[in-house]
Length: 95
Image 1: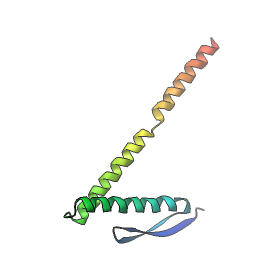
Image 2 (image 1 turned 120 degrees about the horizontal axis):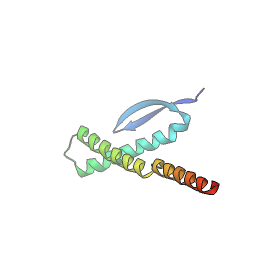
Image 3 (image 1 turned 45 degrees about the vertical axis):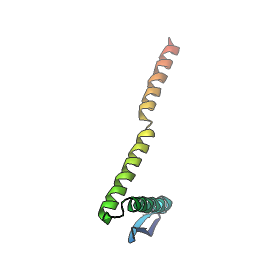
Image 4 (image 1 turned 180 degrees about the vertical axis):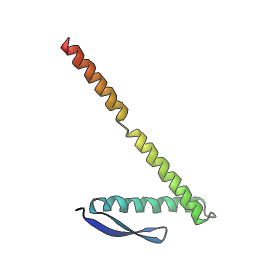
């Protein structure tokens, strides 16, 4: 059975209780810090914007960075290329 843990993240001054696995605690806490940092950045850049707009801007920023990082780390095309090359080398060695 997976070891569960209840934590509370403070996001934009709001306490959000979460039940997570113990292995994920550090990741969730880092995510909370990242979210609050992004919120602070946008609140400083756009002091006259409402909180909902600031949240949306931070969400978009985080999503774009996540998507870019995921694309950079996508090894699937290279894995397929390596499989094809390995197959060709094996075929050449058999002949």
